[in-house]
Length: 344
Length: 99
Image (cartoon, rainbow over all chains, first blue to last red; front, side, top):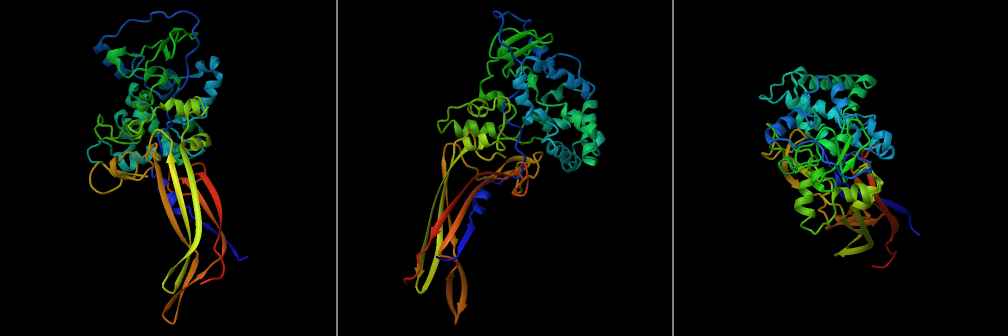
């Protein structure tokens, strides 16, 4: 028996899956709906298109814009949801949706990327109007916040300034718990998916109403601030997630960005290949992760994503007088996900 | 992996998400398809003797480890981010002797 050797053959496979940017936060959203205790009741009145537009600008709540982080966080606070939906809330708290501005718990990578966006992007672009962090307004942060904190659109520039200050404060001192807590108070909570983003086609289906939790049922809802429950026609559709887990450059912006292209991949490659699942079916139901919506970090998702088949054979081939011992390894990777892997 | 295009023009890759607007190339795994890759791993040390190439076998019995990694930031030494999705070891043998 000859000497045993171990040869790693991971390099090329690794390259195949290397990515250079953070995936966006995972698909889906929070929870707030509660089982109906009665029949469906008509709630609120229709919103005129022009009122709706204003409402959309000022927020689903139709309130004046928030002036502080605390004010904005309070509007989207999901602590009352927790009282009845404890399990779902606990699931959500494990997800990146729960820290969409700060990012991963200890590292704060998302906040760091916001800072990089300001330093290497906004400050360097000659027409952005940003020469220093103090110049950053809501419209500037929206290139990230469109998905990481869509409700920022319902805030004054003072909130953008507060966010920027906290991002820089945490970057300067990772022990700055106050800055971290402020940033973590802003997230993709229950009301983002179950209210604000629960209706995509507002001219068709109406505008999200302040006192309604949108889910899969109509009826009463035992919550003082949200006493009504209505069906969102997209709650189980991929388009709900597609609002953030994008199609490519966001051309509605003055400086388009492309953090995620998953929904484009879903529409243009997965569906044409005969794919049938929605985002929610894989990321919430089949994974059994519920509102702990995960992507590549979760073993459950990794297992569902790719089948790997490896065949290997060793032999010698001869070229004239030279004998060459080699190992031939064939790797077949089958992507079972509803989008390309990785995204970028 | 997708190679995002910087500002949707030219041949430069966008580094941060704020720069990305387009693809220069995309080698990501397409959904519902199988991608095959083959690796020919040399199991020899090459020398030259009297102008002739000689390839001496390193081992007749050896193990090939195949690992599939997801590297969101491009490096394996990245706890919490880099993920090993799959690994398998294959024991291989090349017969001794013969010509």
